[in-house]
Image 1: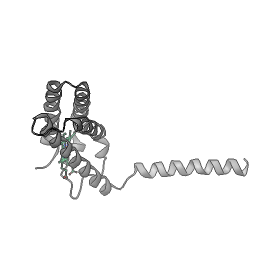
Image 2 (image 1 turned 90 degrees about the horizontal axis):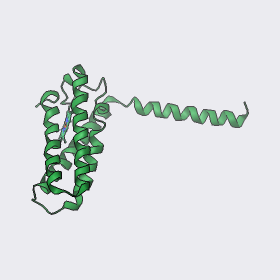
Image 3 (image 1 turned 180 degrees about the vertical axis):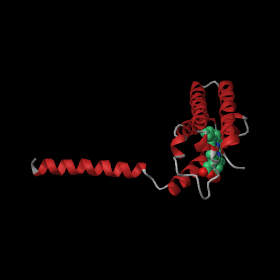
Image 4 (image 1 turned 60 degrees about the vertical axis):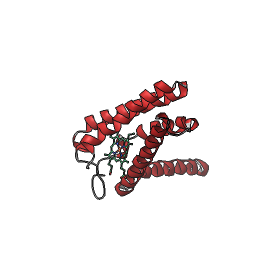
Amino acid sequence: MTIRERFVESLALLGVLVAGAAWAADPEEVIKYRQAAMKALGGHTTAMSQIVRGKVPFNGQLEGHAQAAASLTQDIPAMFPAGSDFGESDARPEVWKKRAEFEKVAGDSSKAAGALAAAVRSGDSAAAGKAFDGFAQTCKGCHQGFREK
Ligand code: HEC
């Protein structure tokens, strides 16, 4: 192996190590991240509600909120890795004990968010309102069984 090849190989190895470190994130940091992401999701949901209920005229912003919600909900299970069930978290033990059900309700939320984003893009405001209601239900659908309070 030439020195150049060895250099390239060690760079590749470094890349693998860095990627590995990103996966094994500190559980406390994961908890902080997911609570911030959930708060953001709450903000987008409240903002969308104001628009679809006709209380404010910011219809041009609806698509951005819907896309953000679709993006935030698609990785919910990954935001609750094993070993992140302590401290300031309001996640119930069921998140890990009833994992299949948790992943199912997370998937339902993500699907509903995708449908909402599509309805908003179609420009049909009645369809968007209906899709928003369906999406908003999925928050409760998970919180009831998987979140304290
Ligand atoms: C698949 C389950 C699931 C879905 C779906 C879900 N959540 Fe959550 N959410 C949780 C759990 C579990 C927590 C507690 C996280 C923690 O404290 O570690 C949480 C926490 C929150 C919090 C509190 C964050 C904080 O600590 O300040 C808000 C706000 C929130 N969710 C909003 C929403 C909204 C709005 C939706 C729907 C658009 C939603 N969530 C969908 C499971 C879910």
